[in-house]
Image 1 (cartoon, rainbow, N blue to C red):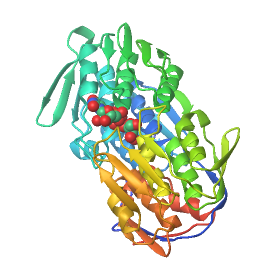
Image 2 (image 1 turned 90 degrees about the vertical axis):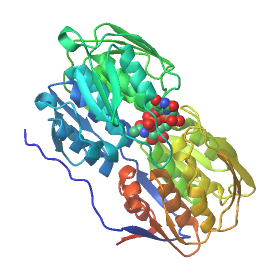
Image 3 (image 1 turned 90 degrees about the horizontal axis):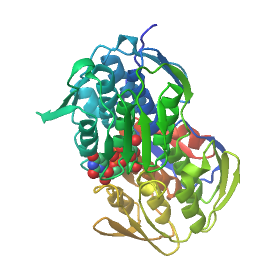
Length: 431
Ligand code: UD1
């Protein structure tokens, strides 16, 4: 198979220029879920056969994960919306620091590497803009499966002792329902000897998607989507052809684009069960929702204040906290948002204030007094979802908003400006 690595996009100082105040109308298509696709790609390390994923979004993070897999010997070939990975050449157990550092989710490779090769050396991903992002639960779980793990000089080294270097099934109780730890341990347990039970597992749809893929590859997984996941290890996993779920966070962002511009828009495909808490909040603020199969049509007119706190699934997702705050900055009345998942995920507040939002902070709680109109300004997104929040604010603001920090936006949104322009927005990429 030809190995083609998709290079990460490199642009100098691009920004979006948004002419605010346009109404949106029409239909927007939701891409495949970034967070699912990244982890499903890591599962290619578990098999010598070819794994083909469909509905893979064209994002720089996906390209980055492709580079990491290629550095380990996996043949990676990108199609227009698919990606094929051939794990037969896997011959490295240590992805390079530069690649892991720029893509946190790549740390999750440690589970499948350890399961397949019995050895893995993966640099600690470090903190990021939204918080410290520890990996204690991943490490604790791998130890429970029989790995010896040491952390020295910023690198996690793990080895499975004994003949055959095969992990052993075990009982793991996560202290917090970490999405990444649950996924890492599911992949590790899939090839382990015996049964693994993960208690207090994350319930997120991406975990269920990973279970779906692993089962398609021949794994024995039960209980994904509940707090207790049981995995009976098998000796070998085979290839599969699998479609990634739609991106619930992108879908939520697009629904919010309609709400903040007081428009009517149809967004799909979505799995509405994945968006329960978000749809409920949209109704609470006064949006009308019409659900037809996998499409949601949203109509917004007056928006009223609401309180929300981020929580693990099925609670309100932390990844939509910043975009929802942009909407509430334009609501009637005072809203209260509390960020419970990440300690540093309210950096967008300062930027929204520069656009005229009336927000007061107390610890991890923001008190948002809705204003009649935001005003366009130069702003910078401090992380992926904060950048999306700036784009939404720009759609509703008077005049021109320029949004910098597109290196974050492009990691997680496939052509956001193209999709919004197609339904009536005026956004130009410059620089
Ligand atoms: C994933 C998502 C991210 C989302 C987050 C929470 C991917 C690639 N990223 O990140 O977009 O915002 O879920 O829904 O899927 N924690 C610990 N110890 C650990 C691990 C985590 O205390 O060992 C804490 C974290 O500090 C955080 C919380 O658990 O407060 C949630 O983190 P986690 O679920 O692990 O997030 P990620 O998997 O990194």
